[in-house]
Length: 356
Image (cartoon, rainbow, N blue to C red):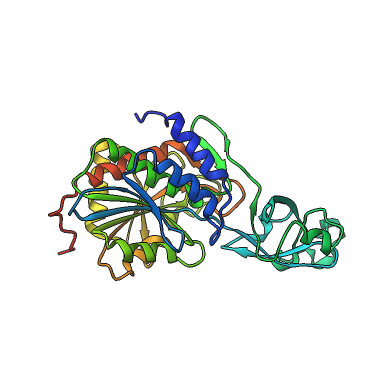
């Protein structure tokens, strides 16, 4: 039985999730992450692209990276029209149907600006109103009377997110717009916190990477920079415990059913085996998902970095991904950190992850 999440960790998670940070604009959540890391890591830093690093030093030892991307999907203002309405492009992949009518939080020059996504009311649409919603037909209304008034509060290029904060549905399940993949960055740092108490034989770097939703640039830059022996990516994955879910494609994955291990071309088989063995020792249930080609995560960037890194992927089951209200389990987050820490403690400078 896994103990409940510590109050300090729960507050850290809440603060991290509530900080707006779409791809390319990750500074607010990255500051929260680094501030927490400074309470126990040997050193904390960031690079020019915006990646944040927290390190447990081990002089002369190989490096192991535990990574989660800290960005989220969002929007960027592209035009302010004569009537003061804002037009926008998506940052990352959105289902336009869930955007209509949402409250939006825009990072304006003098602070956050709240707006509402507008569309012609359904009962005013013509017969073609049943056609798929196009994001290009939607606008943001911030209550401005004209362009001049709107421009005093918002500029072209300002980022925005859906204004949907952290909510705890039950003792275990939580809701937020930014679980993909702020929870990966959270678990990476929680893993480092565990290892700080019982240090392994290798140097460990927790990485909060940027821009996964649009470029994978953060993980690529960091892996080239660190040249780790092993890198474990953390991300969310589609839970299949709701009506109509694709179990044939994604296997039987439940929110609260344990962290998920991936097997496939981007995953080093010895890292997978080590994580699986760690799960057995801890008595954890960890479903497996198969990735026939790429995994669609930062693990793909890590293996292509040229650094010769053995990659692994641990995923957190998530309902309603890329929506304003995603759902994950706190127990899954806790168990993922315990699992990865247990595996890292088995790695030594003599470990060999070549798949002979």
